[in-house]
Image (cartoon, rainbow, N blue to C red):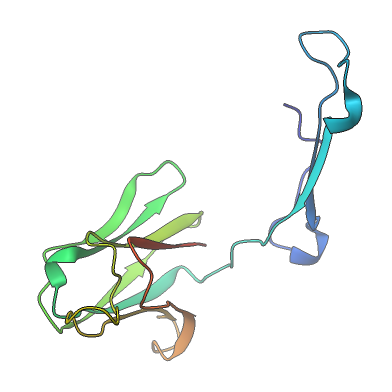
Length: 153
């Protein structure tokens, strides 16, 4: 696969709004059916977050179902929290080196932090900017998310 050119990810206006792929040859020969050789799709860029973040997770009545982590692009765990207690607010301040990361919140029962059909209670998850006192919300997650919810940044 050849990806032509370079992209300046720090200048969102210069990033193309479509990813395009085209089959040029198959095993060094031309394709006999060329009608399906091109595809284009739109995508959303991951948001750019500051290096210092507050991860705030309020557990419900079933904390044994919940855990969360931040991993890098090689799936190395940078931060994780598990063994949580019920109805508690966890505020974890992380200072990340420059890079691309993924925050994942897991629920082992598949009912998220809030589900109408059980008595697990209500929980929440948010990401805040920690460099301005933690009062600027970057992401407010839906509490009824099923087995997991992910945010790349």
